Amino acid sequence: MTDFTGFTDDGLTFLRGLAAHNDRDWFTRHRAVYDDQLKPTLATLIAATSVAMAARGVPLAGDPKSSQFRLHRDTRFSKDKRPYKTHVSGTLTRDGRRMSPGMAYIHIEPEPSGGIDPLALPDEPHGHGPFVAVGFYLDERADIDAIRRAIVTEPLAWGQVEGALAAAGLSLDPGAPAKRLPKGFEDQAGASIEDAIKRTRWIVSRPLSEAEVQAPDLPDLIAGFAADARPLLDFGWNALDRG
Image 1: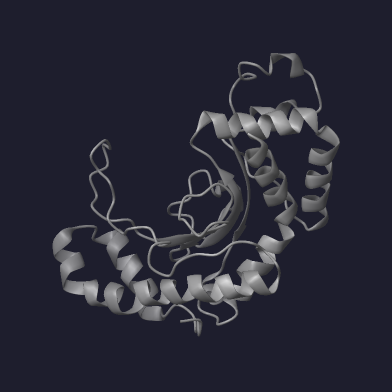
Image 2: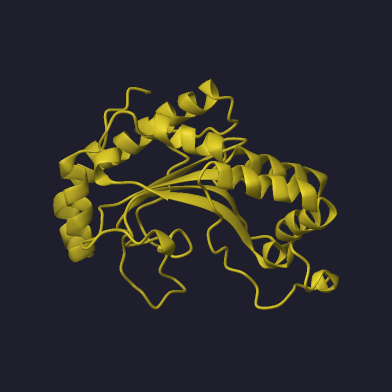
């Protein structure tokens, strides 16, 4: 399942229609496109990208089925009761599990009218078009603090990460920073690494065009992007492994 040929016009049209008619009746009438095209194409993309990652020595992989996110939204604690997401997405991680720290996240949706604002990615990704993101989107405070401690104890190594990203034309996304230095890191006030420590996410992202998501070389494009972001992944994994 590695012969990726690209997402189809029908698949992207389905996602546009779902954004305009986000209800169960519309989805039921059109779900064959999702079942027969979008899900299988995303599965093939995950498999093909895993192969492309391995060819570059990047330790990221995914399972064609379990690495996909559900299309159904969890509306239990949300004021937004729309039942469906308007994109399809999946991840590749170091151990192949969907939410393991340090990942490549693939987000497929139609381009918005008026073009893509790259500054909007990926802290609030939905509705901004297709993109790929690589790095650490963390939920556990212990994991976030492990990366912060590594930045404090190895500021030169962190500077090398930022330099390597810059050399590849990449910069960290906003990162949902804390308003003030977190507890235990107050002594870094005024330090050159203060902004890096305030982060809760360390991610680089790249918008994709519809032409790119419909092209057969998308797996190689994603793997190449992840290879450029490898210094960030290695720094974060080393920090998390040390705890």
